[in-house]
Length: 96
Image (tube, rainbow, N blue to C red; front, side, top):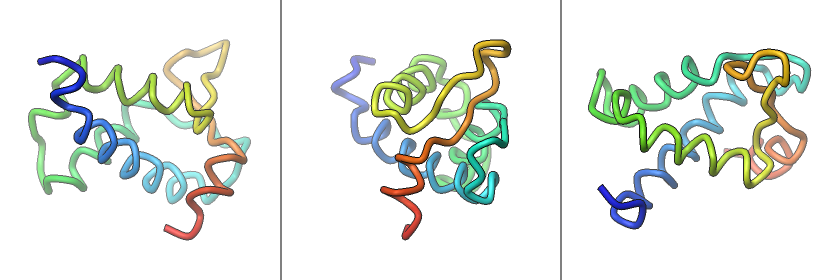
């Protein structure tokens, strides 16, 4: 699957991911969460059950890259599986 073929999936998952992240951290910047846990919850919310998005490693990496490149998450340098919410995310998405 080419990246342009799933850009709508990436955008949709990114938005759902941000919503789940804001909720799970209670908008606290210093609360680390596991990327995979938030991602899997976002996938379940989009479809309602386990689905192919959860197991699609390429799609998951695109969503992670999109979040990092847009400044919506910071990766913990001591534990690359853990991420932090950014102020930018709060400012742009707290009303969703």
